Length: 341
Ligand code: FNR
Image (cartoon, rainbow, N blue to C red):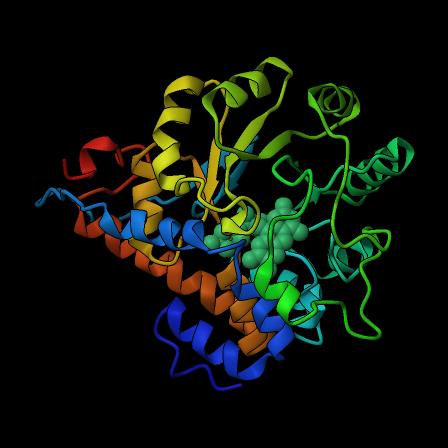
């Protein structure tokens, strides 16, 4: 594929729209209900202004961060997104190859359309695993242990999806997996209805051998509870506006969570990250790292592994530019004072 015309992440979305089936595009691009939160995620990031310093030595940049003992060359991870085979025939294998080439951690969705063992074979960078906890404890425990035995370095338990959202655009295209594509760990269920409470989370954390992050935290009280039950990290996320419409942008929520958590555990954030300056803003407001969802799907749909790599490389390069242009040569030097008040 010729990706030479792709300059930024929005270019990938346009290209992907032309390549994907309407059903797949609607699945990836849509949010819940009136999509207020989808728009707010972007608007809130766009509205924040930067307050740069000049004449700091930015001739060498150190963009690395350490999460759970593992050093990442830059603070961007691949968010878990479902059903990659509807986006590209090579599905999750292409995502894994592409993320590895860009030196990024890939968080595999529990709605992967490729078995974990196969993904592991092609990944040269660490994998994490995202889990939708099911009512079946046996199934859940087996899946956690499978992910651990394959070598997944952390588990992200998605806590913002007790039921699916009002996915109107998906309903209009009558979204379903095409013939021949299946999600081995979804057990045929497309919409989750799972009795997942703090009690089940404690149970899960009690036997997990790798760090457990709760994904989908928006309330400071829930961040506090997550720490109390022994979570190793949290992901501030509104599921890209796909579940509950009219919750605030994650970048708006982030400072309150950061304040409450007070550096006790790492905080990751996702939702609307499309520019290097967005990554910078999230870190300035206290995130340890960010994840990207839709851009990876569009990169994958546009150019398979190469598209995924290029998506991450563009974002990484923009982030480095943003650091240099704001006078910040290390992640630690990216603080709140970078945001214009
Ligand atoms: C998602 N997301 C998601 N989250 C999760 O925990 N398990 C999943 O299987 C999925 N599937 C999924 C599919 C698609 C197509 C999208 C766009 C998103 C949410 C995802 O992990 C992440 O929270 C958001 O995508 C981040 O926001 P942006 O970067 O997409 O704006």
